[in-house]
Image (cartoon, rainbow, N blue to C red):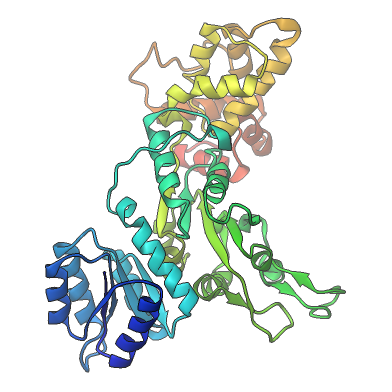
Length: 438
């Protein structure tokens, strides 16, 4: 049962007809008292509600009503219906627990997809504790509880069309998780289009994302499809979305909302049916507070957030990963134990580089890699912090020591030190600032 709440009888009628034709049972209410009465009766799978029910257009009625619904029926998802002029109000509602918001006038197809997603995903969204199986078939190695929780969430979310935001440090496997979401979705047969927004200049954004027509600019000798058009019936993976320029964020928001865009140099709108998966290592919440990332875009991309743990938070997975990367090369138990104690600020990427380097240098001719080889490759025994000898040493101190070793080995060269650690130059620079190192 879906509850539609709006003081506009035309909205109640048109939306009711649309949902009934799609096979849903519908009840309606045109005032807050009617909404609360319907919620108390129970049996609701979804509430779709406007924010205003009188001449007052501040939206405070809707905010108060939303808070009451969240108390009376916290398991029922709420979709807010808003005009473009009240997007800020809708975002405020999302912060208070609303599931999604839809702008008026709506696109019928997109609205029905949002409704289906809200109903399908509600159990997971409201704390369903089902446990999913592993992700080995997608290249995701590990059996730690933290990783198992991530994979369980991915398996619940993937079959829906919900936008997914994947967060985590560099090297934690965000792209593999994005591909897993796509592979387990109904769009698996469609394209998986990766877009590295961190490496895209503002001047190329429209051409790359929306495409262009012949003659749109000097050098445009033929029509070209943009990434959103290529992703039709598939998934677009927006990597490093935290690096997106603010002027481009506005354009991105419109496309994610409407699924329509105009190629550069054209006045014709193009529609594309795609699912959005985004990823970032940035703290988008802090960026929203600092006004460097649009709040409405933030809530549009993170209907479901998947946070990947750092490798240091799932050390029991290090031997499994190391054996996977080592191939036929064998590691002694002492070498594997030593590998499991290293800090890995570069996460899985750093571990992969280290294991492959050890395999090439020390693992030839059937020889197995020993603990001394690991020590030689990562710094002398005297320099390397030993967690077993000093259990009180914090992870931060261990990470700092690893960075100091890498900087010394690289002779102060940031690029080379970042390569040794398996992280980006920008990540290394941030850590140098964090620890007061020069």
